[in-house]
Length: 639
Image (cartoon, rainbow, N blue to C red; front, side, top):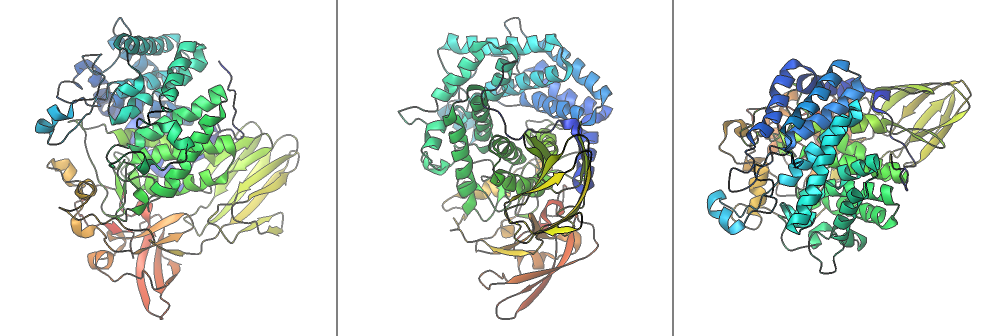
Protein backbone atom coordinates (compact mmCIF):
# COMPACT_ATOMS: atom_id res chain seq x y z
CA UNK A 1 0.00 0.00 0.00
CA UNK A 2 1.39 3.41 -1.02
CA UNK A 3 1.69 5.68 2.03
CA UNK A 4 0.05 9.09 2.03
CA UNK A 5 2.42 12.06 1.74
CA UNK A 6 -0.10 14.28 3.54
CA UNK A 7 -1.81 12.63 6.49
CA UNK A 8 -4.89 13.38 8.54
CA UNK A 9 -4.41 15.13 11.86
CA UNK A 10 -7.69 13.57 13.04
CA UNK A 11 -8.29 9.96 12.08
CA UNK A 12 -11.75 8.63 11.24
CA UNK A 13 -12.83 5.85 13.56
CA UNK A 14 -13.26 2.34 12.23
CA UNK A 15 -16.87 1.69 11.29
CA UNK A 16 -17.27 -1.11 13.84
CA UNK A 17 -16.19 1.18 16.71
CA UNK A 18 -19.41 3.22 16.75
CA UNK A 19 -23.04 2.26 17.12
CA UNK A 20 -25.59 4.95 16.29
CA UNK A 21 -28.47 5.04 18.80
CA UNK A 22 -31.54 7.13 19.57
CA UNK A 23 -33.63 8.53 16.75
CA UNK A 24 -30.81 8.44 14.18
CA UNK A 25 -29.86 4.88 15.14
CA UNK A 26 -33.39 3.54 14.87
CA UNK A 27 -33.86 5.25 11.52
CA UNK A 28 -30.54 3.86 10.25
CA UNK A 29 -31.24 0.33 11.49
CA UNK A 30 -34.67 0.24 9.87
CA UNK A 31 -33.27 1.56 6.58
CA UNK A 32 -30.40 -0.96 6.56
CA UNK A 33 -32.78 -3.79 7.37
CA UNK A 34 -35.21 -2.97 4.58
CA UNK A 35 -32.72 -1.85 1.92
CA UNK A 36 -29.70 -4.15 2.55
CA UNK A 37 -30.05 -7.00 5.06
CA UNK A 38 -33.28 -8.78 4.13
CA UNK A 39 -33.62 -11.38 1.41
CA UNK A 40 -36.35 -9.20 -0.08
CA UNK A 41 -33.86 -6.33 -0.45
CA UNK A 42 -31.42 -8.65 -2.22
CA UNK A 43 -34.15 -10.07 -4.45
CA UNK A 44 -35.48 -6.62 -5.42
CA UNK A 45 -33.12 -3.65 -5.05
CA UNK A 46 -29.88 -5.55 -5.58
CA UNK A 47 -31.22 -7.84 -8.31
CA UNK A 48 -32.70 -4.92 -10.23
CA UNK A 49 -29.40 -3.03 -10.04
CA UNK A 50 -27.48 -6.07 -11.27
CA UNK A 51 -29.90 -6.55 -14.17
CA UNK A 52 -28.60 -3.36 -15.81
CA UNK A 53 -25.44 -5.25 -16.76
CA UNK A 54 -27.50 -8.01 -18.33
CA UNK A 55 -29.74 -5.75 -20.42
CA UNK A 56 -27.12 -3.06 -21.18
CA UNK A 57 -29.83 -0.63 -22.26
CA UNK A 58 -28.44 2.63 -20.89
CA UNK A 59 -27.56 3.68 -24.44
CA UNK A 60 -30.64 2.44 -26.26
CA UNK A 61 -32.16 5.95 -26.42
CA UNK A 62 -31.02 9.19 -28.02
CA UNK A 63 -29.34 10.17 -24.72
CA UNK A 64 -27.34 7.96 -22.39
CA UNK A 65 -28.84 6.95 -19.03
CA UNK A 66 -27.39 6.03 -15.65
CA UNK A 67 -28.88 2.70 -14.52
CA UNK A 68 -25.29 1.47 -14.32
CA UNK A 69 -24.58 3.52 -11.20
CA UNK A 70 -27.07 1.67 -9.01
CA UNK A 71 -25.07 -1.53 -8.47
CA UNK A 72 -21.96 0.35 -7.37
CA UNK A 73 -23.85 2.66 -5.03
CA UNK A 74 -25.73 -0.22 -3.44
CA UNK A 75 -22.52 -2.24 -3.01
CA UNK A 76 -20.50 0.68 -1.59
CA UNK A 77 -23.26 1.37 0.94
CA UNK A 78 -23.68 -2.31 1.79
CA UNK A 79 -19.94 -2.92 2.22
CA UNK A 80 -19.72 -0.05 4.70
CA UNK A 81 -22.83 -1.17 6.56
CA UNK A 82 -21.33 -4.67 6.66
CA UNK A 83 -18.21 -3.32 8.41
CA UNK A 84 -20.42 -1.29 10.76
CA UNK A 85 -22.63 -4.23 11.69
CA UNK A 86 -20.19 -7.15 11.44
CA UNK A 87 -22.87 -9.15 9.62
CA UNK A 88 -21.15 -12.29 8.29
CA UNK A 89 -24.09 -13.34 6.13
CA UNK A 90 -24.04 -9.99 4.34
CA UNK A 91 -20.28 -10.25 3.82
CA UNK A 92 -20.73 -13.64 2.12
CA UNK A 93 -23.46 -12.23 -0.11
CA UNK A 94 -21.36 -9.21 -1.14
CA UNK A 95 -18.41 -11.44 -1.95
CA UNK A 96 -20.53 -13.59 -4.22
CA UNK A 97 -22.21 -10.53 -5.76
CA UNK A 98 -18.87 -9.00 -6.78
CA UNK A 99 -17.63 -12.26 -8.30
CA UNK A 100 -20.90 -12.71 -10.16
CA UNK A 101 -20.72 -9.20 -11.60
CA UNK A 102 -17.30 -10.02 -13.07
CA UNK A 103 -18.98 -12.63 -15.27
CA UNK A 104 -20.33 -9.69 -17.27
CA UNK A 105 -16.84 -8.26 -17.85
CA UNK A 106 -15.70 -8.35 -21.46
CA UNK A 107 -12.36 -9.80 -22.46
CA UNK A 108 -10.89 -6.31 -22.99
CA UNK A 109 -11.83 -5.31 -19.42
CA UNK A 110 -14.95 -3.27 -20.18
CA UNK A 111 -17.68 -3.75 -17.60
CA UNK A 112 -20.65 -1.44 -18.05
CA UNK A 113 -24.28 -0.90 -18.96
CA UNK A 114 -23.75 0.74 -22.36
CA UNK A 115 -23.54 -1.79 -25.20
CA UNK A 116 -21.30 0.59 -27.11
CA UNK A 117 -18.31 0.95 -24.79
CA UNK A 118 -17.05 3.92 -26.84
CA UNK A 119 -20.20 5.96 -26.45
CA UNK A 120 -18.58 8.28 -23.94
CA UNK A 121 -19.28 11.73 -25.41
CA UNK A 122 -22.01 14.25 -24.66
CA UNK A 123 -25.12 13.90 -26.78
CA UNK A 124 -25.74 16.52 -29.48
CA UNK A 125 -28.26 19.02 -28.07
CA UNK A 126 -29.50 19.95 -31.52
CA UNK A 127 -30.40 16.32 -32.15
CA UNK A 128 -31.88 15.60 -28.72
CA UNK A 129 -33.98 18.76 -28.31
CA UNK A 130 -36.80 17.74 -30.72
CA UNK A 131 -37.04 14.34 -29.00
CA UNK A 132 -36.48 15.26 -25.33
CA UNK A 133 -38.13 18.67 -25.44
CA UNK A 134 -34.92 20.36 -24.33
CA UNK A 135 -31.26 20.39 -25.32
CA UNK A 136 -30.15 17.38 -23.28
CA UNK A 137 -26.51 16.26 -23.61
CA UNK A 138 -26.58 13.30 -21.22
CA UNK A 139 -24.00 10.56 -21.44
CA UNK A 140 -23.23 8.78 -18.17
CA UNK A 141 -21.09 5.90 -19.41
CA UNK A 142 -17.87 6.62 -17.49
CA UNK A 143 -19.81 7.89 -14.47
CA UNK A 144 -21.61 4.54 -14.23
CA UNK A 145 -18.33 2.68 -14.65
CA UNK A 146 -16.86 4.83 -11.86
CA UNK A 147 -19.41 3.46 -9.42
CA UNK A 148 -18.99 -0.13 -10.59
CA UNK A 149 -15.21 0.24 -10.29
CA UNK A 150 -15.50 1.79 -6.83
CA UNK A 151 -17.96 -0.88 -5.73
CA UNK A 152 -15.48 -3.59 -6.70
CA UNK A 153 -12.73 -1.85 -4.73
CA UNK A 154 -14.98 -1.66 -1.66
CA UNK A 155 -15.82 -5.36 -2.06
CA UNK A 156 -12.10 -6.16 -2.34
CA UNK A 157 -11.37 -4.14 0.79
CA UNK A 158 -14.10 -6.08 2.62
CA UNK A 159 -13.19 -9.57 1.40
CA UNK A 160 -9.53 -9.42 0.34
CA UNK A 161 -10.29 -11.56 -2.74
CA UNK A 162 -7.63 -10.84 -5.45
CA UNK A 163 -10.09 -11.89 -8.19
CA UNK A 164 -12.22 -8.86 -7.34
CA UNK A 165 -9.19 -6.56 -7.38
CA UNK A 166 -8.16 -8.01 -10.74
CA UNK A 167 -11.58 -7.12 -12.15
CA UNK A 168 -11.15 -3.53 -10.99
CA UNK A 169 -7.65 -3.39 -12.48
CA UNK A 170 -8.98 -4.59 -15.83
CA UNK A 171 -11.67 -1.88 -15.74
CA UNK A 172 -9.09 0.84 -15.04
CA UNK A 173 -6.72 -0.42 -17.73
CA UNK A 174 -9.53 -0.53 -20.29
CA UNK A 175 -10.51 3.06 -19.53
CA UNK A 176 -6.95 4.34 -19.84
CA UNK A 177 -6.52 2.47 -23.13
CA UNK A 178 -9.86 3.72 -24.42
CA UNK A 179 -8.99 7.37 -23.74
CA UNK A 180 -5.68 6.95 -25.55
CA UNK A 181 -7.34 5.20 -28.49
CA UNK A 182 -9.88 8.01 -28.88
CA UNK A 183 -7.24 10.74 -28.22
CA UNK A 184 -9.28 12.39 -25.45
CA UNK A 185 -9.05 13.16 -21.75
CA UNK A 186 -11.66 12.48 -19.10
CA UNK A 187 -12.68 16.14 -19.24
CA UNK A 188 -13.74 15.68 -22.88
CA UNK A 189 -16.24 12.95 -22.04
CA UNK A 190 -19.71 12.66 -20.56
CA UNK A 191 -22.09 15.43 -19.62
CA UNK A 192 -21.95 18.55 -17.41
CA UNK A 193 -18.52 19.72 -18.62
CA UNK A 194 -16.94 16.37 -17.85
CA UNK A 195 -17.59 16.52 -14.10
CA UNK A 196 -19.21 13.05 -13.80
CA UNK A 197 -16.41 11.34 -15.73
CA UNK A 198 -13.63 13.17 -13.88
CA UNK A 199 -15.06 12.08 -10.52
CA UNK A 200 -13.47 8.68 -11.11
CA UNK A 201 -10.34 10.29 -9.65
CA UNK A 202 -11.20 9.21 -6.08
CA UNK A 203 -11.46 5.43 -6.67
CA UNK A 204 -8.61 5.59 -9.21
CA UNK A 205 -6.35 6.93 -6.46
CA UNK A 206 -7.54 4.12 -4.18
CA UNK A 207 -6.38 1.66 -6.85
CA UNK A 208 -3.06 3.51 -7.20
CA UNK A 209 -2.40 3.17 -3.47
CA UNK A 210 -3.22 -0.56 -3.55
CA UNK A 211 -1.12 -1.41 -6.62
CA UNK A 212 1.53 1.31 -6.82
CA UNK A 213 0.97 1.50 -10.59
CA UNK A 214 2.00 4.98 -11.77
CA UNK A 215 -0.44 5.04 -14.70
CA UNK A 216 -3.39 5.35 -12.33
CA UNK A 217 -1.87 8.38 -10.63
CA UNK A 218 -0.94 9.83 -14.03
CA UNK A 219 -4.58 9.75 -15.15
CA UNK A 220 -5.54 11.73 -12.04
CA UNK A 221 -2.71 14.25 -12.51
CA UNK A 222 -3.77 14.75 -16.13
CA UNK A 223 -7.33 15.40 -14.96
CA UNK A 224 -6.11 17.91 -12.37
CA UNK A 225 -4.02 19.67 -15.03
CA UNK A 226 -7.16 19.97 -17.16
CA UNK A 227 -8.72 21.94 -14.30
CA UNK A 228 -5.98 24.57 -14.52
CA UNK A 229 -6.33 25.52 -18.16
CA UNK A 230 -5.11 28.89 -19.29
CA UNK A 231 -8.02 29.16 -21.75
CA UNK A 232 -10.45 29.23 -18.81
CA UNK A 233 -12.51 26.36 -20.15
CA UNK A 234 -15.23 25.32 -17.71
CA UNK A 235 -15.06 23.88 -15.13
CA UNK A 236 -11.36 24.79 -14.51
CA UNK A 237 -12.09 23.53 -11.04
CA UNK A 238 -8.65 24.04 -9.50
CA UNK A 239 -7.69 27.33 -11.17
CA UNK A 240 -11.03 28.97 -10.40
CA UNK A 241 -10.87 27.74 -6.82
CA UNK A 242 -7.29 28.94 -6.32
CA UNK A 243 -8.47 32.35 -7.56
CA UNK A 244 -11.31 32.14 -5.00
CA UNK A 245 -14.04 32.62 -7.59
CA UNK A 246 -17.60 31.62 -6.59
CA UNK A 247 -19.00 28.91 -8.84
CA UNK A 248 -21.84 31.07 -10.20
CA UNK A 249 -19.22 33.45 -11.71
CA UNK A 250 -17.41 30.76 -13.70
CA UNK A 251 -19.73 30.77 -16.68
CA UNK A 252 -22.89 32.44 -17.99
CA UNK A 253 -26.07 30.57 -17.14
CA UNK A 254 -26.85 28.47 -14.10
CA UNK A 255 -27.81 25.10 -15.58
CA UNK A 256 -24.34 23.54 -15.88
CA UNK A 257 -22.73 23.40 -12.41
CA UNK A 258 -23.96 19.97 -11.24
CA UNK A 259 -23.53 20.00 -7.47
CA UNK A 260 -23.26 16.29 -6.70
CA UNK A 261 -20.73 15.58 -9.44
CA UNK A 262 -18.63 18.67 -8.69
CA UNK A 263 -18.36 17.72 -5.01
CA UNK A 264 -17.45 14.19 -6.11
CA UNK A 265 -14.56 15.76 -8.00
CA UNK A 266 -13.57 17.77 -4.92
CA UNK A 267 -13.45 14.45 -3.04
CA UNK A 268 -10.91 13.37 -5.66
CA UNK A 269 -8.87 16.57 -5.33
CA UNK A 270 -8.66 16.06 -1.55
CA UNK A 271 -7.43 12.51 -2.09
CA UNK A 272 -4.91 13.76 -4.67
CA UNK A 273 -3.53 16.10 -2.02
CA UNK A 274 -3.09 13.20 0.40
CA UNK A 275 -1.34 11.09 -2.24
CA UNK A 276 0.97 13.81 -3.62
CA UNK A 277 1.35 16.26 -0.74
CA UNK A 278 0.94 19.15 -3.22
CA UNK A 279 -0.51 22.02 -1.19
CA UNK A 280 -2.40 23.70 -4.02
CA UNK A 281 -4.83 20.79 -4.13
CA UNK A 282 -5.76 21.27 -0.48
CA UNK A 283 -5.99 25.05 -0.95
CA UNK A 284 -8.28 24.61 -3.96
CA UNK A 285 -10.56 22.25 -2.03
CA UNK A 286 -10.70 24.57 1.00
CA UNK A 287 -11.38 27.63 -1.14
CA UNK A 288 -14.16 25.90 -3.04
CA UNK A 289 -15.71 24.61 0.20
CA UNK A 290 -15.73 28.16 1.59
CA UNK A 291 -17.30 29.57 -1.58
CA UNK A 292 -20.01 26.92 -1.46
CA UNK A 293 -20.63 27.76 2.20
CA UNK A 294 -20.79 31.50 1.48
CA UNK A 295 -22.88 31.48 -1.72
CA UNK A 296 -24.56 28.08 -2.02
CA UNK A 297 -25.53 27.05 1.51
CA UNK A 298 -29.32 27.00 1.47
CA UNK A 299 -31.82 27.47 4.29
CA UNK A 300 -31.90 23.69 4.86
CA UNK A 301 -28.11 23.64 5.50
CA UNK A 302 -27.22 21.70 2.39
CA UNK A 303 -25.63 23.41 -0.63
CA UNK A 304 -27.02 24.28 -4.04
CA UNK A 305 -30.45 24.45 -5.56
CA UNK A 306 -31.88 21.07 -6.59
CA UNK A 307 -28.47 19.62 -7.49
CA UNK A 308 -27.11 22.73 -9.20
CA UNK A 309 -24.82 25.45 -7.96
CA UNK A 310 -26.85 28.50 -8.89
CA UNK A 311 -26.60 30.87 -5.92
CA UNK A 312 -28.61 28.52 -3.75
CA UNK A 313 -28.15 30.82 -0.76
CA UNK A 314 -30.50 33.35 -2.35
CA UNK A 315 -33.25 30.84 -3.06
CA UNK A 316 -35.90 31.21 -0.38
CA UNK A 317 -37.74 28.20 -1.82
CA UNK A 318 -35.05 25.64 -1.11
CA UNK A 319 -34.83 22.13 -2.48
CA UNK A 320 -31.79 19.93 -2.11
CA UNK A 321 -30.93 16.46 -3.36
CA UNK A 322 -29.82 13.89 -0.76
CA UNK A 323 -26.84 13.00 -2.99
CA UNK A 324 -25.73 16.62 -2.55
CA UNK A 325 -26.13 16.41 1.21
CA UNK A 326 -24.13 13.17 1.40
CA UNK A 327 -21.26 14.69 -0.58
CA UNK A 328 -21.33 17.92 1.40
CA UNK A 329 -20.96 15.68 4.47
CA UNK A 330 -18.10 13.84 2.78
CA UNK A 331 -15.99 16.83 1.77
CA UNK A 332 -16.69 18.61 5.06
CA UNK A 333 -15.54 15.62 7.11
CA UNK A 334 -12.50 15.01 4.89
CA UNK A 335 -11.36 18.61 5.27
CA UNK A 336 -11.88 18.43 9.03
CA UNK A 337 -9.75 15.28 9.19
CA UNK A 338 -6.93 17.05 7.33
CA UNK A 339 -7.08 20.42 9.07
CA UNK A 340 -8.88 20.01 12.41
CA UNK A 341 -10.88 23.20 11.72
CA UNK A 342 -14.19 23.07 13.55
CA UNK A 343 -16.08 25.02 10.87
CA UNK A 344 -16.21 21.89 8.74
CA UNK A 345 -17.98 19.94 11.48
CA UNK A 346 -20.29 22.85 12.24
CA UNK A 347 -21.49 22.52 8.64
CA UNK A 348 -21.50 18.71 8.85
CA UNK A 349 -23.77 18.49 11.89
CA UNK A 350 -26.38 20.90 10.51
CA UNK A 351 -26.48 19.10 7.16
CA UNK A 352 -26.68 15.70 8.84
CA UNK A 353 -29.35 16.57 11.41
CA UNK A 354 -31.58 18.48 9.00
CA UNK A 355 -31.67 17.73 5.25
CA UNK A 356 -29.98 14.34 5.54
CA UNK A 357 -32.22 12.86 8.23
CA UNK A 358 -35.25 14.43 6.51
CA UNK A 359 -34.31 12.43 3.39
CA UNK A 360 -34.65 9.03 5.08
CA UNK A 361 -38.27 7.92 5.17
CA UNK A 362 -39.66 6.48 8.38
CA UNK A 363 -40.75 3.19 6.77
CA UNK A 364 -37.08 2.40 6.07
CA UNK A 365 -37.87 1.42 2.48
CA UNK A 366 -37.35 4.59 0.49
CA UNK A 367 -36.06 8.13 0.67
CA UNK A 368 -36.47 11.52 -0.88
CA UNK A 369 -35.26 12.62 -4.27
CA UNK A 370 -35.21 16.15 -2.89
CA UNK A 371 -36.14 17.72 0.43
CA UNK A 372 -37.95 21.06 0.31
CA UNK A 373 -38.49 24.03 2.58
CA UNK A 374 -42.28 23.66 2.40
CA UNK A 375 -45.08 21.55 0.94
CA UNK A 376 -43.86 17.96 0.86
CA UNK A 377 -40.62 16.31 -0.11
CA UNK A 378 -40.20 15.15 -3.68
CA UNK A 379 -40.08 11.44 -4.52
CA UNK A 380 -39.08 9.82 -7.79
CA UNK A 381 -38.31 6.63 -9.64
CA UNK A 382 -35.71 6.61 -12.38
CA UNK A 383 -35.71 5.08 -15.86
CA UNK A 384 -38.54 2.62 -15.11
CA UNK A 385 -36.72 1.07 -12.16
CA UNK A 386 -38.86 0.43 -9.09
CA UNK A 387 -36.40 -0.39 -6.32
CA UNK A 388 -33.35 1.75 -7.08
CA UNK A 389 -32.75 5.48 -7.05
CA UNK A 390 -29.49 7.42 -7.07
CA UNK A 391 -30.22 9.21 -3.79
CA UNK A 392 -31.86 6.29 -1.99
CA UNK A 393 -28.87 4.04 -2.70
CA UNK A 394 -26.49 6.69 -1.35
CA UNK A 395 -28.27 7.30 1.97
CA UNK A 396 -26.46 4.62 4.05
CA UNK A 397 -23.18 6.41 3.33
CA UNK A 398 -24.42 9.49 5.21
CA UNK A 399 -25.08 7.44 8.34
CA UNK A 400 -21.65 5.85 8.01
CA UNK A 401 -20.02 9.29 7.70
CA UNK A 402 -21.72 10.31 10.95
CA UNK A 403 -20.55 7.11 12.67
CA UNK A 404 -16.95 7.76 11.64
CA UNK A 405 -16.81 11.40 12.78
CA UNK A 406 -18.75 11.10 16.05
CA UNK A 407 -15.48 10.17 17.76
CA UNK A 408 -12.07 10.60 16.13
CA UNK A 409 -8.52 10.22 17.34
CA UNK A 410 -5.55 12.54 16.95
CA UNK A 411 -1.97 12.22 18.14
CA UNK A 412 -2.90 14.37 21.13
CA UNK A 413 -6.00 12.49 22.25
CA UNK A 414 -9.62 11.49 21.66
CA UNK A 415 -12.06 13.91 20.01
CA UNK A 416 -15.83 13.86 20.56
CA UNK A 417 -17.42 15.75 17.68
CA UNK A 418 -21.17 15.08 17.59
CA UNK A 419 -23.70 15.02 20.40
CA UNK A 420 -26.27 12.49 19.26
CA UNK A 421 -26.80 9.17 21.04
CA UNK A 422 -24.13 6.59 20.32
CA UNK A 423 -21.81 3.96 21.82
CA UNK A 424 -18.12 3.89 20.93
CA UNK A 425 -15.44 1.30 21.72
CA UNK A 426 -11.86 0.90 20.55
CA UNK A 427 -8.75 -0.75 22.00
CA UNK A 428 -8.31 1.95 24.65
CA UNK A 429 -11.66 3.59 25.27
CA UNK A 430 -15.29 2.73 25.87
CA UNK A 431 -17.53 5.76 25.53
CA UNK A 432 -21.28 6.26 25.70
CA UNK A 433 -23.19 9.40 24.92
CA UNK A 434 -26.82 9.70 25.94
CA UNK A 435 -29.20 12.53 25.19
CA UNK A 436 -28.89 14.68 22.11
CA UNK A 437 -29.68 17.98 20.47
CA UNK A 438 -33.32 16.95 20.40
CA UNK A 439 -33.46 16.85 24.19
CA UNK A 440 -32.69 20.44 25.11
CA UNK A 441 -29.08 20.06 23.93
CA UNK A 442 -28.22 18.16 27.11
CA UNK A 443 -26.02 15.06 26.98
CA UNK A 444 -24.12 12.83 29.38
CA UNK A 445 -20.84 11.29 28.31
CA UNK A 446 -19.25 8.40 30.17
CA UNK A 447 -15.74 7.20 29.37
CA UNK A 448 -13.77 4.20 30.58
CA UNK A 449 -10.11 4.33 29.58
CA UNK A 450 -7.36 1.69 29.59
CA UNK A 451 -3.73 2.74 29.48
CA UNK A 452 -1.72 5.85 30.12
CA UNK A 453 -3.20 9.26 30.81
CA UNK A 454 -4.81 10.82 27.73
CA UNK A 455 -6.61 13.98 26.63
CA UNK A 456 -10.30 14.13 25.80
CA UNK A 457 -11.35 16.99 23.52
CA UNK A 458 -14.98 18.09 23.28
CA UNK A 459 -15.97 20.10 20.24
CA UNK A 460 -17.99 23.19 21.21
CA UNK A 461 -20.07 24.21 18.17
CA UNK A 462 -19.80 27.78 16.87
CA UNK A 463 -23.58 28.23 17.24
CA UNK A 464 -23.49 27.41 20.98
CA UNK A 465 -22.95 30.71 22.82
CA UNK A 466 -23.73 29.51 26.36
CA UNK A 467 -22.09 26.26 27.45
CA UNK A 468 -21.74 24.36 30.70
CA UNK A 469 -19.59 21.28 31.22
CA UNK A 470 -19.51 19.50 34.57
CA UNK A 471 -16.81 16.90 35.22
CA UNK A 472 -15.93 15.48 38.66
CA UNK A 473 -18.05 18.17 40.30
CA UNK A 474 -16.16 20.99 38.57
CA UNK A 475 -18.12 23.34 36.32
CA UNK A 476 -16.61 24.88 33.18
CA UNK A 477 -17.96 27.38 30.64
CA UNK A 478 -16.07 26.97 27.37
CA UNK A 479 -16.41 29.44 24.51
CA UNK A 480 -18.25 28.83 21.24
CA UNK A 481 -16.00 27.15 18.68
CA UNK A 482 -13.53 25.94 21.32
CA UNK A 483 -11.98 22.48 21.62
CA UNK A 484 -12.48 21.95 25.32
CA UNK A 485 -9.87 19.65 26.86
CA UNK A 486 -10.20 17.29 29.82
CA UNK A 487 -7.55 14.97 31.18
CA UNK A 488 -8.42 11.28 31.47
CA UNK A 489 -6.32 9.60 34.18
CA UNK A 490 -4.42 6.37 33.63
CA UNK A 491 -6.86 3.45 33.60
CA UNK A 492 -9.47 6.00 34.61
CA UNK A 493 -13.12 6.92 34.17
CA UNK A 494 -14.92 10.16 33.51
CA UNK A 495 -18.55 11.20 33.59
CA UNK A 496 -19.16 14.48 31.81
CA UNK A 497 -22.42 16.42 31.70
CA UNK A 498 -22.62 18.68 28.66
CA UNK A 499 -25.17 21.47 28.26
CA UNK A 500 -25.01 23.32 24.96
CA UNK A 501 -27.02 26.41 24.12
CA UNK A 502 -30.66 25.54 23.42
CA UNK A 503 -31.87 29.16 23.18
CA UNK A 504 -34.25 29.31 20.20
CA UNK A 505 -33.08 31.65 17.45
CA UNK A 506 -35.44 33.51 15.12
CA UNK A 507 -33.49 33.72 11.87
CA UNK A 508 -34.59 36.24 9.27
CA UNK A 509 -34.00 35.44 5.62
CA UNK A 510 -31.84 38.45 4.83
CA UNK A 511 -30.43 37.71 1.38
CA UNK A 512 -31.70 39.27 -1.85
CA UNK A 513 -34.45 37.01 -3.14
CA UNK A 514 -34.37 36.06 -6.80
CA UNK A 515 -38.09 35.80 -7.51
CA UNK A 516 -39.12 32.90 -9.70
CA UNK A 517 -42.47 33.51 -11.35
CA UNK A 518 -43.83 31.12 -14.01
CA UNK A 519 -43.41 32.61 -17.45
CA UNK A 520 -40.81 35.12 -16.28
CA UNK A 521 -37.10 34.97 -15.42
CA UNK A 522 -36.12 31.62 -13.92
CA UNK A 523 -39.13 29.56 -14.97
CA UNK A 524 -37.03 26.38 -14.99
CA UNK A 525 -36.43 26.77 -11.25
CA UNK A 526 -40.16 26.86 -10.59
CA UNK A 527 -40.49 23.62 -12.50
CA UNK A 528 -37.60 21.99 -10.63
CA UNK A 529 -39.10 23.00 -7.29
CA UNK A 530 -42.63 21.90 -8.14
CA UNK A 531 -41.47 18.61 -9.73
CA UNK A 532 -44.15 18.53 -12.43
CA UNK A 533 -44.36 14.99 -13.75
CA UNK A 534 -47.01 12.78 -15.31
CA UNK A 535 -45.82 9.52 -13.74
CA UNK A 536 -48.13 8.31 -10.92
CA UNK A 537 -45.39 7.68 -8.33
CA UNK A 538 -43.85 11.12 -8.90
CA UNK A 539 -47.26 12.73 -8.45
CA UNK A 540 -46.92 12.00 -4.75
CA UNK A 541 -43.90 14.30 -4.69
CA UNK A 542 -45.27 17.33 -6.50
CA UNK A 543 -45.53 20.62 -4.64
CA UNK A 544 -48.05 23.34 -5.52
CA UNK A 545 -47.12 26.89 -6.43
CA UNK A 546 -48.99 28.28 -3.42
CA UNK A 547 -46.63 26.39 -1.09
CA UNK A 548 -43.82 28.60 -2.34
CA UNK A 549 -42.68 31.81 -0.65
CA UNK A 550 -41.96 35.03 -2.53
CA UNK A 551 -41.44 37.45 0.34
CA UNK A 552 -38.87 37.23 3.17
CA UNK A 553 -39.87 35.21 6.22
CA UNK A 554 -38.23 33.69 9.30
CA UNK A 555 -37.08 30.28 10.41
CA UNK A 556 -36.56 28.99 13.96
CA UNK A 557 -33.49 27.10 15.12
CA UNK A 558 -33.03 25.24 18.40
CA UNK A 559 -29.36 24.41 18.68
CA UNK A 560 -28.36 23.08 15.24
CA UNK A 561 -31.90 21.87 14.50
CA UNK A 562 -34.19 23.59 12.06
CA UNK A 563 -37.82 23.56 13.24
CA UNK A 564 -40.99 23.40 11.18
CA UNK A 565 -44.75 23.57 11.36
CA UNK A 566 -46.22 20.27 10.25
CA UNK A 567 -49.55 18.69 9.48
CA UNK A 568 -48.57 15.59 11.47
CA UNK A 569 -48.36 17.60 14.73
CA UNK A 570 -51.70 19.34 14.20
CA UNK A 571 -50.81 22.52 12.28
CA UNK A 572 -53.46 23.61 9.79
CA UNK A 573 -52.83 24.49 6.17
CA UNK A 574 -53.80 28.10 6.89
CA UNK A 575 -51.42 28.27 9.84
CA UNK A 576 -48.51 26.92 7.79
CA UNK A 577 -49.03 28.75 4.51
CA UNK A 578 -51.31 31.77 5.00
CA UNK A 579 -50.50 33.25 8.42
CA UNK A 580 -48.77 36.66 8.64
CA UNK A 581 -44.99 36.57 8.95
CA UNK A 582 -42.99 37.86 11.92
CA UNK A 583 -40.18 38.91 9.56
CA UNK A 584 -38.89 42.42 10.30
CA UNK A 585 -40.65 42.56 13.68
CA UNK A 586 -37.61 41.59 15.81
CA UNK A 587 -39.43 38.58 17.22
CA UNK A 588 -38.12 36.47 20.08
CA UNK A 589 -39.14 32.87 20.61
CA UNK A 590 -39.84 30.73 23.67
CA UNK A 591 -40.24 26.96 23.34
CA UNK A 592 -42.16 24.66 25.66
CA UNK A 593 -41.64 20.94 25.09
CA UNK A 594 -44.68 18.77 24.48
CA UNK A 595 -45.22 15.07 23.88
CA UNK A 596 -45.99 14.15 20.32
CA UNK A 597 -45.13 12.01 17.33
CA UNK A 598 -42.15 13.96 16.02
CA UNK A 599 -38.53 13.57 17.07
CA UNK A 600 -38.99 16.78 19.09
CA UNK A 601 -42.12 18.83 19.57
CA UNK A 602 -42.72 22.24 21.04
CA UNK A 603 -45.32 24.90 21.58
CA UNK A 604 -43.61 28.07 20.38
CA UNK A 605 -44.54 31.56 21.50
CA UNK A 606 -43.14 34.36 19.35
CA UNK A 607 -43.22 37.86 20.78
CA UNK A 608 -42.55 40.83 18.50
CA UNK A 609 -40.99 44.14 19.53
CA UNK A 610 -44.49 45.68 19.70
CA UNK A 611 -45.74 42.98 22.06
CA UNK A 612 -47.70 40.99 19.48
CA UNK A 613 -47.74 37.28 20.34
CA UNK A 614 -47.99 34.33 17.96
CA UNK A 615 -48.39 30.81 19.29
CA UNK A 616 -47.81 27.78 17.10
CA UNK A 617 -46.69 24.17 17.27
CA UNK A 618 -43.25 23.19 15.92
CA UNK A 619 -41.28 20.00 15.49
CA UNK A 620 -37.84 19.19 14.17
CA UNK A 621 -37.61 19.61 10.40
CA UNK A 622 -36.06 16.16 9.94
CA UNK A 623 -39.19 14.33 11.10
CA UNK A 624 -41.79 16.85 9.90
CA UNK A 625 -42.55 15.01 6.67
CA UNK A 626 -40.07 12.18 5.99
CA UNK A 627 -42.60 9.92 4.30
CA UNK A 628 -44.51 9.62 1.02
CA UNK A 629 -47.68 11.69 1.27
CA UNK A 630 -50.84 12.35 -0.71
CA UNK A 631 -51.06 15.76 0.93
CA UNK A 632 -49.09 18.53 -0.86
CA UNK A 633 -49.34 20.78 2.21
CA UNK A 634 -47.48 18.71 4.83
CA UNK A 635 -45.12 21.27 6.38
CA UNK A 636 -43.37 24.62 6.21
CA UNK A 637 -40.22 25.97 7.84
CA UNK A 638 -41.41 29.56 7.36
CA UNK A 639 -42.99 31.83 9.95
